[in-house]
Length: 130
Image 1 (cartoon, rainbow, N blue to C red):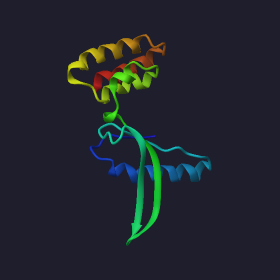
Image 2 (image 1 turned 120 degrees about the vertical axis):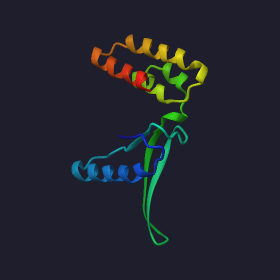
Image 3 (image 1 turned 30 degrees about the horizontal axis):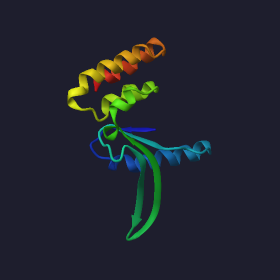
Image 4 (image 1 turned 135 degrees about the vertical axis):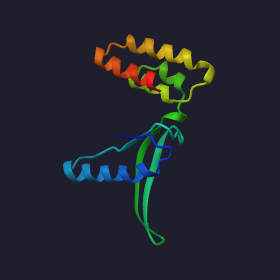
């Protein structure tokens, strides 16, 4: 998984391919590449592509899964069971008038989630930072 915080997905596309290729060569195991976009939503969850051309001929077509946090509905993830989804909801689409309420709800859910204290701290820090 590669996390990208730029306002564009372009730099990540070639890097995901490079990481994939290195992991496949080194470990000779299947690899599921996933890009996690912090500032670009695209369609929320989907597949992106990296392509290389020589003149007009496409030499390489590489697809990878992505999650574009800004296009996802924060309310759905704060109400969900996945603690990482609860924390990352801070980077998702939130109506301005619901920000404070959802922040408090996310923090409450993370305190009660049953993870160890260090993980709870990290997850809560994500909510506070974003």
